[in-house]
Picture 1 (cartoon, rainbow, N blue to C red):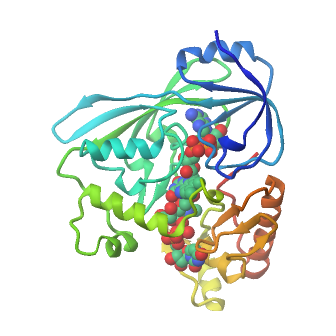
Picture 2 (picture 1 turned 90 degrees about the horizontal axis):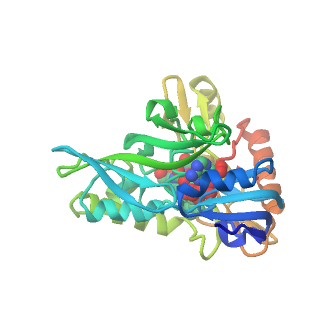
Length: 335
Ligand code: FAD
Ligand code: EPU
């Protein structure tokens, strides 16, 4: 037997701290229950929730919010150089990073302190400080909502891109990720300290996976707001990827515009720089604002509604288009 709660506020289930109601709410702690829960709620709208750190709720939800809260980390294969680890979707991502560090398994140290669940991590191919999930991702098991069958997706089948995967495109809303397998390295690790800030933070410390994670944590704490203190969902927009030709034109008018390499013929430009140049950094409209240390992060200082935050995001998008001719695509899921 399981009990589905009714008319639940989701305020504590999203890092923006938006107070909306869901008609029904269930925290799934065992995958065995999934079929039963879905059969019982057949025909009503379904929304999958992890830890709510990449969402902006803008209205009440007349359906079932299913929070994936399954736990477990298990080594399923070992070779001389690698371990294959299966992690249940409801595990907290950072706890998993800490587990890998305590076992001296490398590959995800640059992804320390990213909020959210393991099950949501493949959805947008989480990334930070020069590393993306796809570099360690082996496969995931996912439940197809319509057929109620479990499928396994390989790394290639997930079609990972920058903050992107097949689960955000043609399979959007069709699968529930139940677990993911990661291929981690035993010692000696191949580390990545290409991101300048890591190098300076490490100073003269050895580049071990533990020290890299510590450096990443220190950098993140210095500029990103802690959602427990100020509501936010990390970067609100993606960094735009524009053609080399468009970049050359833009660079003539704005010679200080920073840029990074991207796929052949394209350039990535920092949305944070654009938003700061537009004068939005640190602004506040009621309880909705733009973080004072990171212009890419929109914040809720207390009681802002999703609509107020979305209104601010739209002003930023319009200003970016008017002045730079650049479209800022939201990274956060607007619901
Ligand atoms: P949720 O917000 O609950 O859900 C996100 C989406 O995934 C929703 O569409 C939801 O329906 C879907 N989903 C969730 N779980 C499942 C599942 N099991 N199966 C199917 N669909 C599912 N992201 C980065 O990539 N890099 C960063 O550096 C980074 N920094 C951040 C810093 C802060 C302070 C915050 C608040 C966020 C940051 N993020 C970053 C964004 C966020 O941490 C990631 O997107 C994370 O993977 C979201 O996990 P979640 O469990 O909270 O997902
Ligand atoms: N910048 C500014 N002003 C700002 C912020 C940034 O000018 O207020 C410019 C600077 O030129 C800076 C550059 O943007 O050098 C890059 O800034 P930062 O290193 O802080 O990274 P970001 O591009 O703003 C991205 C990710 C983050 C990730 C960091 C570190 C996206 C959308 N965001 O941010 O991911 O943690 O790099 O790798 O790609 C997230 O996805 O939620 C997230 C936080």
